[in-house]
Amino acid sequence: MTTSPMNRMIKTMSKPKTTATPTPREALHALLTELKFKGMARVLDSELDRAERNGTSAQRWCNAC
Image (cartoon, rainbow, N blue to C red):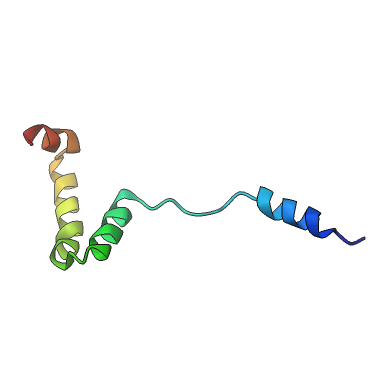
């Protein structure tokens, strides 16, 4: 039995997309690359790692602004 073109299209449209959501770290790297902020991209991981080790929260950082 063959499937009609319409049924094939409906099956294709109803399949969930399996796009992985980037992590915040990956999103930041993508943005820094797009903006060509090479220096910031170079130190991002080490600064985020340091902040995680020291327990520096985003909330505390934002309150300082």
